[in-house]
Image (tube, rainbow, N blue to C red; front, side, top):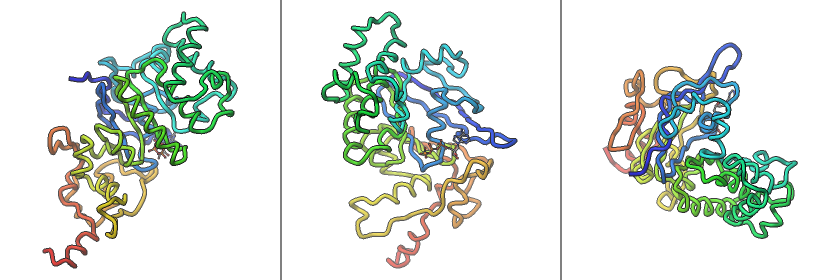
Length: 338
Ligand SMILES: Nc1ncnc2c1ncn2[C@@H]1O[C@H](COP(=O)(O)OP(=O)(O)OP(=O)(O)O)[C@@H](O)[C@H]1O
């Protein structure tokens, strides 16, 4: 069986706003195994990046509670030195915006070389250069020798993202976190970068956490999916169960708001509203309750938990059992379904 690489237990990440702390990630428990892509999906503001940054310990002023076990060791207890060694070596991250992820004043070759040194301090300049060039080749950059000596602003957006990926995989990380890796790119480049990630996925033994709001990307790449709403995981399942048998009202809403071949000509079900801001998040009860006011209050749990409805398929709160889309009922009536 593939080894458990990351175990996230009851993770809570809170930001101080005025005089109080507000949780952007609340009671998140997840595992990431070797050789798998775990996608984390949800609308903007639901806490996906806050979760990724917590895993990489990149928040300076947030309060982090809970455990993050990497191969059984709790990295929340790590010193700055230990965490710096872990980052870029065993755990690395591909950021949303390649321009901000790269140092504008440093040549590409030096930026890759710097990361290689994290892993092996004695690697000679010649060896670093050879490895950097082979990494640039691996991520599909034509004329790697030339790019090696260029600055980020001299490259196109797609090439910059390839460089960011080369840096992220430089030391063969065990855990790779990709935070919306294609959001800042235009559509054709997006699909090239996804193809590249898919190739790398086959190549590496890593556990990949793919953060995205794009369900097409999830369908193409993920093995398992965690759906996040207002800082919490509301549903986790393997990709086939999630797309084939979605249960939580939020997951159903996400999936049915995307047109597909079957929905052509029929109405899409869309749940109105947005993820509330941190200060307005309900601290108790079902967080999705206010978005589905037509569902009877008694359907919700007072203290919603994740329920395992089939092996490996978890859903938060009992409201999924009673859920229906209002226009679904109207359609049924039109079609004489009782
Ligand atoms: N440093 C911070 N201080 C205070 N609030 C923050 C901070 N970082 C994020 N938040 C808030 O935490 C919540 C979750 O934000 P986060 O960026 O993690 O969402 P997201 O799902 O990644 O969204 P997007 O897809 O737009 O990046 C939001 O309400 C956001 O405003």
